[in-house]
Image (cartoon, rainbow, N blue to C red; front, top):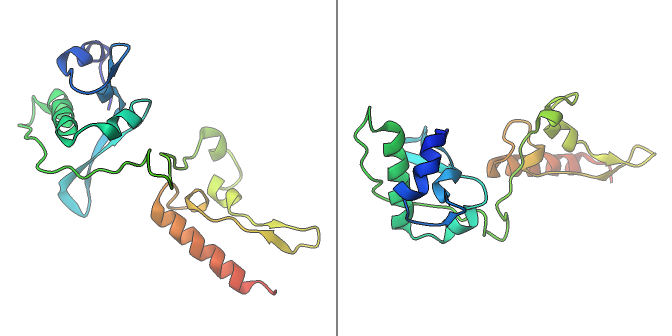
Length: 167
């Protein structure tokens, strides 16, 4: 989402529900909306930034009202926006397995020979050439980094590599 400076300055006053810090609204952390290919009636929203822990504690109706406000702010002139019928959310930040993190490629990592994922997935070897340490996880997936299915695929890749080792 790309808020105009004037809209950001008024956002906390126009939509006062939910957390506000230093006259900044939690809605500033609304990063994007996108429709799911598998179900065009589902609209996904991503939040990033300092308000995420606070957003996870908000009641569903506040999030629904905030998302509706944002959609209307951006699309009111072209579309009649009705509020979401249902909210299904992930508490990725407070999930003890993830704590809100996922991998991403930086500009520096894109300059590497090959992808960052291919570099990260290379096994460490002893001087003898014997494999000593393998790496899996979504950050090592060349096509699905930052996803759960990328982590699963990388795990299968390394399991196949272990099976092929001459132990």
